[in-house]
Amino acid sequence: MKRTYVWPKGHWNWHFNVTHKHGLRVGDLCFVGGQVDVDAKGVPQHKGDLHAQIDVVARHIETVLGHLGADLDDVCKLVMFYVNDGTVDERAALTTLRRHFRGAVPPAIMPVPLPVLAYPGMQVEIEAIAMRKESGARMVRTPSNPKGHWDWPFSHGVRCGEMIWVGAQMPVDQDGHVRAPGQAEEQARINIENIRRVLDGFGAKLDDVCRINTFFVGHGTAKDWARAADVRAHAFKWPGPVGTGVPVPALFPDGMTIRQETCAMLAIDGAHLPRVAVRPTDHWDWPIAVNFQQGVKCGNLIFVGGQVALDGGGKSQFSGDMVRQTRVTMDYIGRVLEAYGAKFDDVVKVNAFYRGGASGETLKKNLSIRSGYFTMPGPTTTGIPLTDIAAEGLEIEVEAYAIVD
Image 1 (spheres, rainbow, N blue to C red):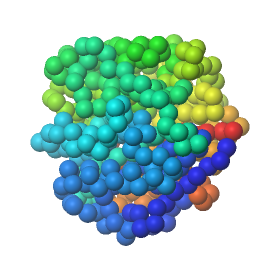
Image 2: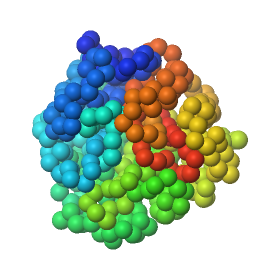
Image 3: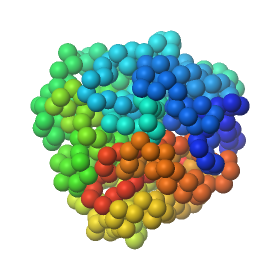
């Protein structure tokens, strides 16, 4: 399939050379890597001003999409990582971003509050996935906003073609009040039920989910991760989807412990699409038994779950060593791809969550290694610093999407 890679002239840059590009198109799918408000030399602009940075980042996304033959009205899915010390009005920030999307069906979104981002003064990083026919024709987008769900500036779910994007599902009632505050297991059950209801609006089921990403209150221990992992993992029949679990110091409002998003696929006529799930031999495994898979292939899309430097017994390898763990993690991604006869150059999108603060050097330490696994031009990427990764001794978690002919 034809691939279009984009690096707009004069666009923002990292402080060092990478193979990654800002945008990549394959068929109807357009991927925009995490966009930030920095200049061509990598210097953050509008430091500390969240709303100003949101406006700039939205325009960056629009610029990249324009070079891919699409625009903001084609966006189906957004993830917004933003700095929040507990004083930021998330609704107001989402409203600022929502103004840039004027179509009848706004995209689904996952907002993720964090203590810091990659550089001092950086307040927001946003990635996007859009869909538009290669002929230039717009594709029909259908929303799912179940009755009884809370009011939200964006869609709870969006279907376009065979793709279904479910945005942030949270344990809140229709008035936005947190349910079962502080109770991780019960909130996980509520979230799964909310996901089920959004999917039902498209005639889809949990069995149609290919990827589930979970952002949970955690502080770098397997115990934190396991609190609700059993609930979400066994909500899916074997073989389940791939998953990424990302601990954050806190989710807001107070008492919320978990947010989740999913990507599902369903045939145009409503039929369940067959998929192939893999767990390569001699691979890492979770600390507890789960129905998650390391890879899921549906159609020509390969979903690679969050890969970490654990061994087959769920114990960390090279504890505390970012460089060695990054190599182990990328090698694991290679194994999953190989199981499908795919390679690194089939990858279209990479998301990396690494342990570190607002330091460009910490980002460089892992991004330079990750980037080296791809030939120029490479896939889009988003890199997010975290206080901790999901289990003791871990420094980085990397997930990927690939498309094969």
